[in-house]
Image 1 (cartoon, helix red, strand yellow):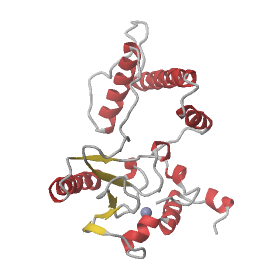
Image 2 (image 1 turned 90 degrees about the vertical axis):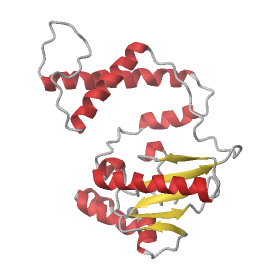
Image 3 (image 1 turned 60 degrees about the vertical axis):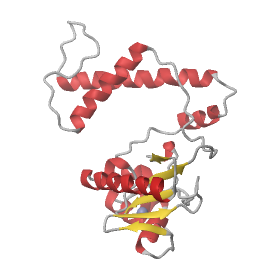
Image 4 (image 1 turned 180 degrees about the horizontal axis):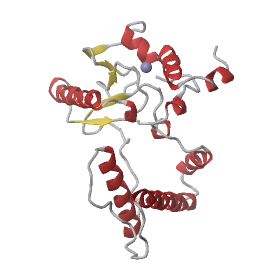
Length: 239
Ligand SMILES: [Zn+2]
């Protein structure tokens, strides 16, 4: 067993290696654990979920042990989606599915149960009792939507390496002549404000079952999906 102290002193690479050794999906990929394989090549493995939401519920696994999407190189994630397209098509043709849901639980807060990145492909039928996409429709003020839009657009351009003449400025007050990094900081503060303001309506609906969950969320520290040490296995993976 690894002690807490040993864990705290491990490098990201050592943590990654420890996770691999404890990862049920890495054991499935290596063949140590049996599975119902439906497709395999050098990069990915697709298996039937042992607890399917519907018959033909497929888990498409990336063979390398990555926990969350930000860690996956672009060519590998692109490849995964190409294979997912073929699997989805096979569900329609071979299983006579009427549609498919393709989803990713990216991070524990999003419902990720095992620290190995995967894509779920679920064949759908007209009446199959699945309500996973029964999403609420929240009312967000237009001003807040605009702040969200600007913050996201700037960050996406940055991540994709797109140079814009002038980042989108949230407030057009002439006295605010800031450097680019100051503007970014300013936007991050705005986003924080937005996140704080979004928490309020949740608390009002005290009867809602989800409130219990949201309280738990509030107590948890902020999770950075880029930081692998946030994803060390804290309990046994469910699947
Ligand atoms: Zn793994």
